[in-house]
Image (cartoon, rainbow, N blue to C red; front, side, top):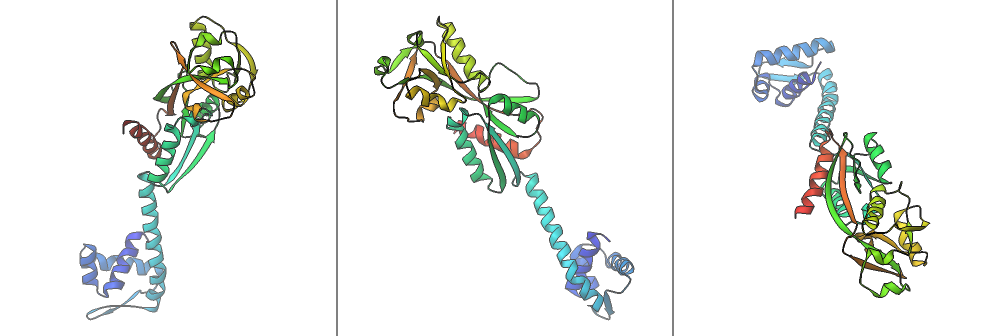
Length: 296
């Protein structure tokens, strides 16, 4: 017994006539009759009374009809679910982002736009450092990640640059230099830096250190905080100065000042990364939507 037999049966039951049912199904009447006979043979009892001008369900046929309708309904639901999944309308998407990346407006905007465009996709979010995000991506624990890309390139990962935002100096409000709006990095030559470990964000860490070296000094690392978002809190406490991505300036904490950098300044890059040979249509939808928002 297959779905074709059930569809033929339902057509005859609805039309109460083999000839009309055959026309409805687009086949000849003799092949249709044979299909019904095959079905009756498999069941072991007649499903229809053959009348002079039509067909009438037997008691067996009436019992079969109730379940046959449910079977076809379930088949149609399964077909629809498969088609929706194939179009990327349903399914799941696991998005990762680094602690500093989430401050860039591109990231929350992309997530919000995707949720609105594909409300039936189960979206989960994961915050971690860049190294862990790339590991989870490679291990298929995440599908797409927003990171601060560094010099490391992975053959298995596809990176697309989204933004290059200038970084800013962050000072305690009471610091003598806080009266300025713009400063060169060299003004921080003798200041203790509040920094995060390189393992938390190696690309930002390296960018800051290398730019300081490029302008002629080695930054003095004072306090080390567990994550980038904690930097401004310790600066506000007067424990040092720091350099952060410009988008973090939206974090308004009492007791700090953000200053633009004059001359050679570090840049915080933002990229979206996915597996190079990713076949998921949902991932493609997310990346396409993210990139399209940049162009609009």
